[in-house]
Image (cartoon, rainbow, N blue to C red; front, side):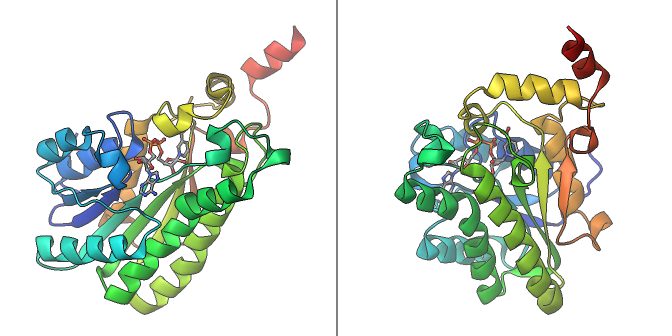
Length: 270
Ligand SMILES: NC(=O)c1ccc[n+]([C@@H]2O[C@H](COP(=O)([O-])OP(=O)(O)OC[C@H]3O[C@@H](n4cnc5c(N)ncnc54)[C@H](O)[C@@H]3O)[C@@H](O)[C@H]2O)c1
């Protein structure tokens, strides 16, 4: 199912850790659709060695960058432009981590150093990426940036903890920068709010299986998979969505607008 939607386009993909990662699937789909890509992740993630397999399959260089480090980001964009011999057309921000969630800290007993770190990695990093690209004028007119988010930014989901606050900030940055980048360069910036998906980051949330099966039962179409998220992202990188910007786009099988489903109602009767 390839339509050359990204023929001739060049992009940077953040956040492929292993073959379950949403970024991994997206990298594969982008290349199938004709794009050339650069893969990047934090140095610690690269040491796990998995990313080299994807790099080989996608014929893509890997450039290490901690998304909280401005020197790393400057180096990444500069080297990527050298590699492509010109500017970039799309960027995927698929990065998230909360130390508080990882360590099982309840929302009413957060460690603020961990909170800072989580906000920097999961939200401020999008601003850092955009500001770096903006100052280097690294993205072509009508380029597209997508960041991944979760509906806990709008509604309370138990045990998502301070990641909910990080996602709210991420979505806000996407809107605010979307304005400035749109006016200056016609670059569009959106977030995709994805269904719960079994990945390393997803499974780090306590009670994740319950989350997933609840969402599955509440969504008329069922949960969206990582592969389907990759398909949707490709459309946002393509020229078919040129006037879409500053949006938070739900990719969740209808979960976000369902009050109660038959399956959940039946269970409540028991
Ligand atoms: N899995 C889900 O249920 C789900 C649902 C909605 C949204 N999301 C979001 O999708 C995105 C991708 O997560 P995933 O589920 O594919 O899990 P994942 O664990 O495969 O990906 C998270 C990535 O973030 C990277 N990362 C962490 N710290 C970093 C840093 N300092 N610099 C650069 N990269 C760093 C990790 O190395 C990893 O590759 C995240 O933003 C996540 O919150 C996930």
